[in-house]
Length: 97
Image (tube, rainbow, N blue to C red; front, side, top):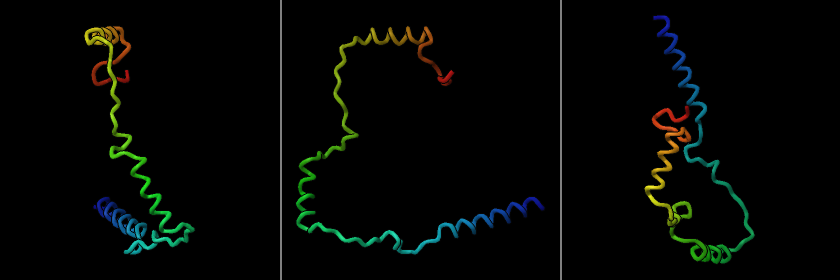
């Protein structure tokens, strides 16, 4: 019983301490920064119209490269089987050994 009471009291203290660490204003006003700019609205809009011309609709990271292989499928399978047999590549779930 003593261990249970100690565990619950430690958990309660930790819970109350975590609420204090997360205290913030409701509207998150610390993120609203004020700054002065030297650019005009027309300059910003002109720059914004050039962005679609320089970038595509597909993100660069999702473009798949087209590669045409000249290797024969049976030759590649034979090389893989040989590498597996000689121990150059691992097999099974324990691949790090």
